[in-house]
Length: 309
Ligand SMILES: [Zn+2]
Image (cartoon, rainbow, N blue to C red; front, side, top):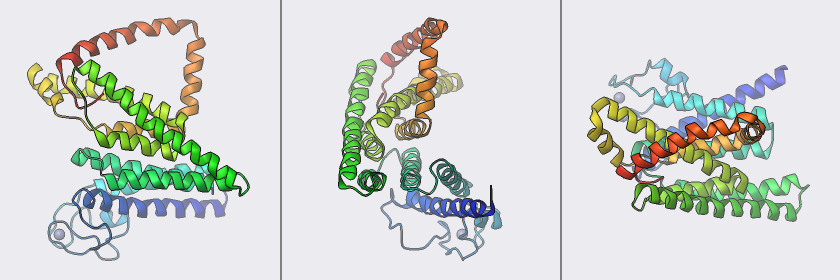
């Protein structure tokens, strides 16, 4: 690694950290219906406005030792953590795609996914302004990337745009299919309009292949997640309490975001591993645990109503 590359990496890291800092503001203010631009960052308790030094991503929190300088209210370590995660994502995406439109596009997609994941975990909603702006931005990136990748031709733009629109339509369609399958297993109609918009957003930003794989990965992750939560709460507080806990809806957005991330960056590896596995002589043995899981799941799901999947 030469000195020029090191400097670029450092710049990309701090750009990511600064955008992560803005994501914290978005996650906190958008669900509350507040402006993301005004007023500037301040302590939620005493409303003391953060000074220049305190506003530095990651370091500001460390400098204050996780407390407001004025009223000493603890500031959640989630803020510097999100800043650090965003910074690391930016560096990883930059190292994979270099100085290209893909780096900008995928870094921003990760920002949208991260913000939506946190909001869904906090409030059980996926706000329309975020999913819709993400969808439009995704299509705009398709047009730009198509133009640049095809030596500045409109035909290239059109080709990529069609790919985005196909991804978008397939995203909604896959989500409907998952919902219908979930409804059959659970025995009642599942709900969740924001999740379909999130799938459409992922499709617009990537391609029908990525969104197809993302739907599959998200479903597997969601099923594992539901079993873990149900198992955990059953162990902790008895069978009935476990069932009651699952009736409370679990947010699906984080699973879709994780599925999309895995498919986008590890999709080729996932498909290769799968194909290699399907050629091995042991592949049929895999059916035994899979069947056991499916049977258990079916009887479990019949008893417990979920929001979706
Ligand atoms: Zn304060």
